[in-house]
Amino acid sequence: MRLLFLHAHPVPESFNTALCTAAVDAARAHGHDVRLIDLNVEGFNPVMTADERRGYTGDVPLPTDLLPHVEALKWAEGLILVYPTWWYAQPAILKGWIDRVWRPGIAFTLHEEGNRLRAGLTNIRLIGVITTFGSPWWFWTFVMGAPGRKIILRGLRYCTNSKTKTFWLGLHDMDNQTDPTRARYIDRVKARIARIPL
Picture: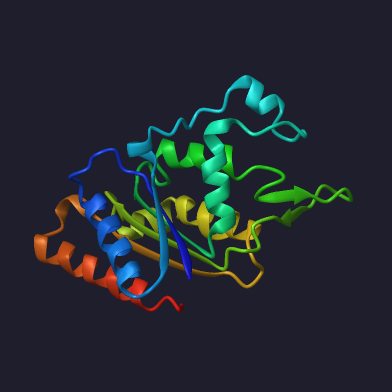
């Protein structure tokens, strides 16, 4: 499978970066065609300008910095996002990537009758998330309502193939976890990637 990994953590020595490396290595070891976009390393600008917003739904050329991202999305059969959950959702750089790249004419089209969304990325048939949390699972799930999960597995999924499969891996209460627990989570990530069909 053509797998696009998207990483969003600013610290190269972070546990999150280690998770991304483990996931990418596991995908390559199992024969997948892999691409990696590291938003922080690239210096991706998550801020949509006024002019970009004015042309968001119009027939205007894409900003040039988005072209490789759009090409990668159209190439991918699977999208795997690796990021820390901050303030119950995606880091700003990843949310800005979604805002700027998952746009009309690419991720979706608006059906003229009732402005209903029609999926534009039907080539994508797998979406996965590998993340970490500062909060315990019960607080993020029951108190906050799992907003980050809904954005990806409901919102983005709606713009992909109608049969898109999803997975979600999360390590909660990150700051209080032991090294053995973190190592087991990395093993769990590798095992889940190994189950992705070619």
